[in-house]
Image 1 (cartoon, rainbow, N blue to C red):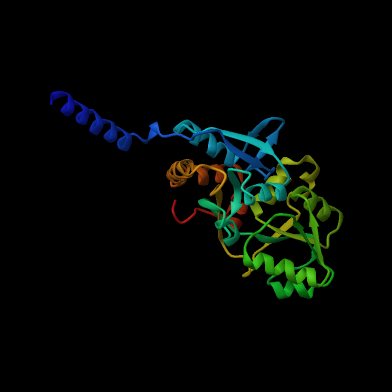
Image 2 (image 1 turned 60 degrees about the vertical axis):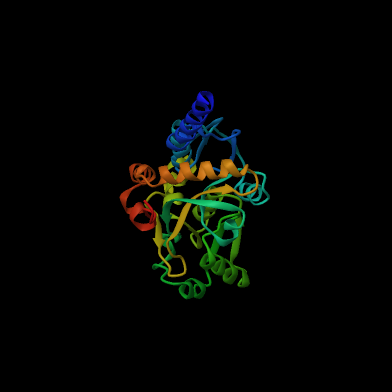
Length: 275
């Protein structure tokens, strides 16, 4: 009888410890993370992956029993791997209905994409109709980028007019704008500014571009998606809980304001609603 009571006491204690100390939980395997260079959010130098989002995941590693393995791929390949269930995370990405079907979203920040043009291209672009009316302008977009329904509508309208050009990455887009003042793009000011600062070939764009807000490009959440199919269910639950907890702090916001100019932050960045 004494042994039975002791058994149940130990069992209750173990259950209490499991509830009180979630640190004993862990990811069942290394989490696979495909990445593409994304301004100051994701920086790749050889086999070293740094930047705001990898730094966030490094903090998560220190606070949990999860480990992350990175590998570099083009942006559209990064999207494909996640959507097909072959990648565990999709990082530095915008929340969309399409992605919600295959992943659980963890918001880190709110962003707003803008129309980016050379200051020499003329007056500010005030609306989609304004952009469409300037027949000399061409929109250069990055394959795989998606800033929501309004963004897709702009691409559709420009494609109808044969004024849409698709490039494989943001650096190629910026290079196109260097060569032709009538080329404009749509992305977040922080992303474009990050590439101008990190890519030597783009340094001469500093101070020469303009960021214009459009009603069709509202504020949206940006963060990390956790795959619903690539990771085991327990890993999904544990990772999301750990990420949500860390994302609720000011760590990501402080990272952005520490590396980007205040005017760029003001234009296209703010804390997400849960922070």
